[in-house]
Length: 159
Image 1 (tube, one colour):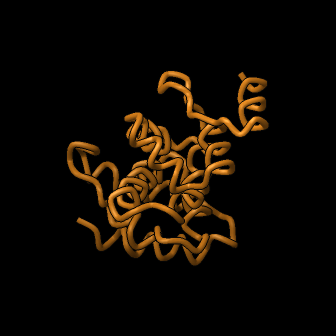
Image 2: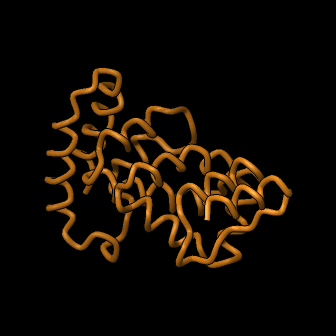
Image 3: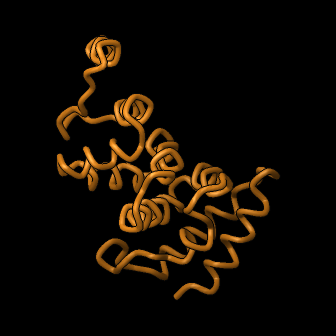
């Protein structure tokens, strides 16, 4: 598969793979080759955007790392999808989510840590809040201290 992607990139003919085989590396390659705006449009056209945001929500670091690259070219709806995905991922991989939030782009701790998702996405908001607080308390990286503090303050105000 990597060889096929490499050949496609070298020839200038790059298309995202079918949803069943889409990986973070392939989305990154598309961003690098075609730009984030084109990649987002192609993902939406192929009905793969939801899969991307669902994968970010799992807390997998490879998918989370895509968020700043996608956010620079996302419209309001896509930005909100990314923020919700990071919010769902937060209790699963707080250090990576905080690292992404520390990067300057349109998605920040105030947006992600305010529990912007619906009850369809997270049924027990109280449990989510406890799990997220615990995950944030476990983050000891000094470089993330300010982002962590902002997130905790926002989470405490969220309902």
